[in-house]
Image 1 (cartoon, rainbow, N blue to C red):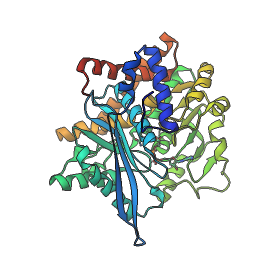
Image 2: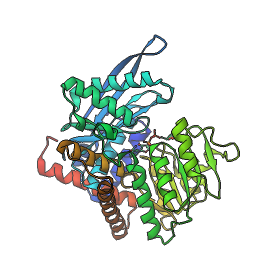
Image 3: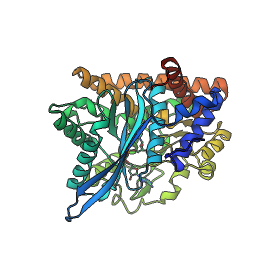
Image 4: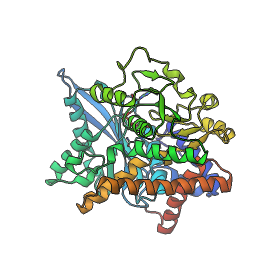
Length: 421
Ligand code: NAD
């Protein structure tokens, strides 16, 4: 194993998944390090004047995984315990995700170690603008294109775009995706990840012959991905029986009031305060008996023990990296009971519509929302069929089939191009 700065449990997980896939693809050992380890990584100090008069320095990162298929692309996470190993793992997963969906990108990821829930709006703007300022030498519409992830949103992307544009002296909308529609964003981007999760959950239910109407759903995380998934599945006629975020957990076997939850979220930003009667134990959420379980918060929440306790029929991974390799081993034994839609497939709607946004910005020619959704569902459905078919043919897990499809595309591009990218 090479000496590396990429350590910690999340990178270790990405490494183990990659090794399992490389074994299945029979990739020679000398080609593995080149595929796995990121091409570039940046660490920056972000000094910010806080509201109380202090100057605080935050740590920011950006990891660009490979350059073999085009610019790199990936989200920006604002989270208190962010470290470079986690960012690198997320960049690696983005690579396999983009390649699986057929997008002309390598993976990237970045972020700032800060707690966005505790920053004032002015402090959040200062952190966002200064982070982008520090990144200017390393990003560009043909080099590395950012997007939102946990703790960031369309407003943060508007600040990123504005900061980069001020430096260039002209508006450069194509430097980030996930922007508000008012400043170059695409219709449908904000909802794309959650809608994609719901679309594939519906396809999985079809596969196992369980009707979606009246089906029960539990969702961990009620931010962008979790809340939109809840909305879309509710619109399909499913019952959302449990939801949680970092402030509260609610459950109701008769089905929660989804429009009410969304309204509460829009007003307060978190679930806390929605109801006293429906409060439930957040630690029990993942083990809720339901048809569809959607982890849509943090990574590594389904380990071997939790995988044994799951009582769902479809596991739709909205979050990145929710299942550990140990958890995967258990799910492998439960393959006939639980249909897994792996993260790099399940939550790929976000990067797919980000790609559409980038294309529209480059051409300054904007599509209608039905156009965006039609193209999104088409790409996702094709990737879904490919993964399910390969897994059945080769008797491997859906995760290995999905990863293999992404990894071999990057491997082949590298083999054809040579050593540079
Ligand atoms: P977000 O910041 O909008 O929401 C995160 C949610 O998780 C919040 O509701 C937060 O309260 C909740 N949460 C945090 N810790 C929790 C805990 N311990 N228990 C329960 N809930 C907890 O972030 P998001 O954009 O919705 O991202 C969620 C996940 O989806 C992440 O893994 C992210 O990488 C992944 N993802 C996001 C996108 C996207 O387009 N936003 C695309 C692909 C994947």
